[in-house]
Length: 264
Image (tube, rainbow, N blue to C red; front, side):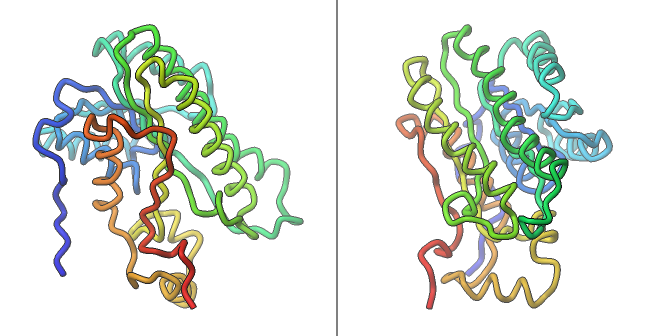
């Protein structure tokens, strides 16, 4: 079966919208940013590596989209606040936020250093909070609603024996999402979590499944028997961010080919 690379939503779905995407220089964040730009959004690419952001920005512009690169570390609260201030000053508003910035590696829990724990939880949990609260304050003050999408992980639901730092941080993101969805619904702000499975051509998969044997073992537990494509993740992300999902908030959407069901 052929899987289309294009977006599933109508052209112009995000016309006149401004979307901030953290982790926008690679992987899932890049794919979501490209899809949003293709659907008409002005996309603000956030990440720590200027060269990666600039390459994605230039590619989006070459394809007819609008994108801005804004390098920063999401752990730096002051830098996040300045980014939001700059984007609003330049474009007048922010409508959507995607928190895709992440960090992960395998380690036995007893060997995990305090610095390693702080680094991953700082990016995944603290960074998501800094961006979400800062953008949320703008959305509340603006009074026109908006949507936030956090990229989750099945580790948050099932545990991660050798990724306890990331699993714990992602679990915190899930609870944060539900809490803010309940708190900010009155302002017309929706927050959801998208949980991709084994995603092809991403750094996270390359790090966590470094050998062909590890990849085969992981895919053997997926009923659909293949990785999820980044374009499929991006399509689901765009739906949850869009007005077509206007009554969906505080939920996790699994896009894992059935892996969470368990397979004998």
